Image 1 (spheres, rainbow, N blue to C red):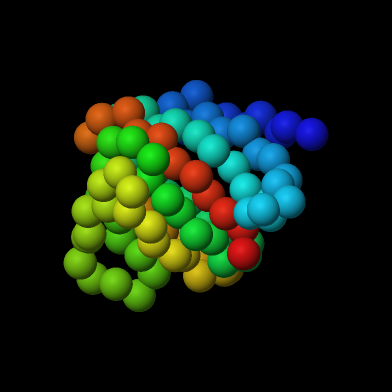
Image 2: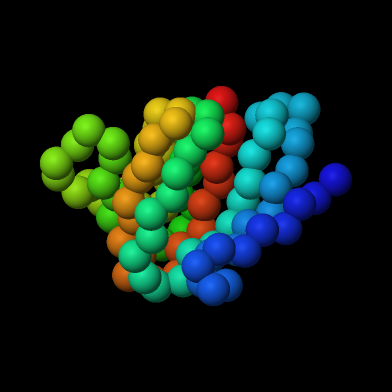
Length: 94
């Protein structure tokens, strides 16, 4: 079953799904802007197209992640994103 979600007045949209090979996940697109997301459980984020500037929990330096890059976010935390162009992603819930 697919689960459609929308955040930040429609600037971030995702479709959640369950997969035998990768488990529970969502794929989505972020429009230009700055966003803060909270996590309930650990997440693995893969940038599919575009790029994200990310400030992870406990870090003081923003890092760029371009298409093909992967980063992990701890559970029960917040992370900050800056998006300069429409960017697609795959989020796996670990």
